[in-house]
Length: 367
Image (cartoon, rainbow, N blue to C red; front, side, top):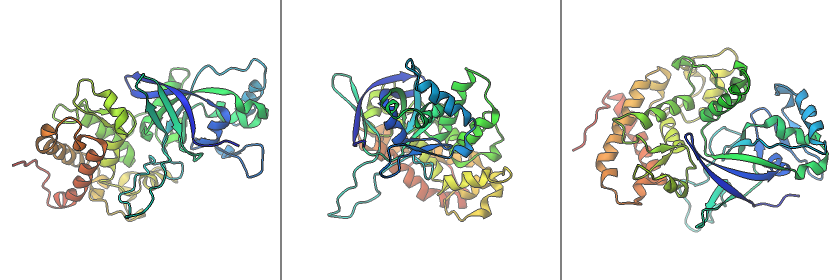
């Protein structure tokens, strides 16, 4: 029986895509905490063997037994890494954020479920997995991992190399999967669609899900010369300890996940349901899902009517105002430049945007 929390030494990796960590974890640990949209493994009470869920939807189920046979060999080896996106909830497809909006006086805060990295003063890192809750989405390596269910029980102690991204939005997971596999062999166009809900090829904007649009607008904010967020948006954990390590070239930085979530909340309260509605049955355009559920998000109508330029301009002008009013005067380490501060500013934008959209006034005015 595994005991949590589990800690493992990790190596911090900086590459053009952003920051991730490499750690070694036993197969049984990964079976406990990892999942894919296609497969997951569970260990029933009082049982010694894991059970697979979702095998009927697996692209190549026969591969599991072939890989299991290889795992049982005395010379079995997996020198390539399993790629994980940690802090990603299986039930609703959103990033786990267990920091409540408010805590009642006298209440005991709930222990965090989030995977985290502690960076030591000597430069070493420690990965901490606090619970057995499935919060690690498998980007690449699902067949390799789940084949251990069919292998000999003692093989569950086999060490596996893992590349771990913290707080990586799902469209980036799909992009990473497609990129990795396209360099090895041609990608079946339906594969990325089935695993992540996104096509490898570019698709018309009218078919974009809320998170895909939010990622697109976030990338644009990170590259636009007029944007105060240019050079400040990075793929990294949402927590400030990791972001402070990336402060080269810009006074402060913010996680991609924070900006994506801030923008997405402007036009959807349930991105998972929207994505399901877009994909179920025949593929639909955004304009076709408006009647399928109620959503009071301030820019919901702008999303449904493909007014992406309006959403972007409003976000851009608001962030320019934030730069002039707050960020340009902020002292180093000010909360307004940290994760909680940026999240609070997006909350203000959400409150202001409904009236601005209704009055058709999204201009920039700073006195």
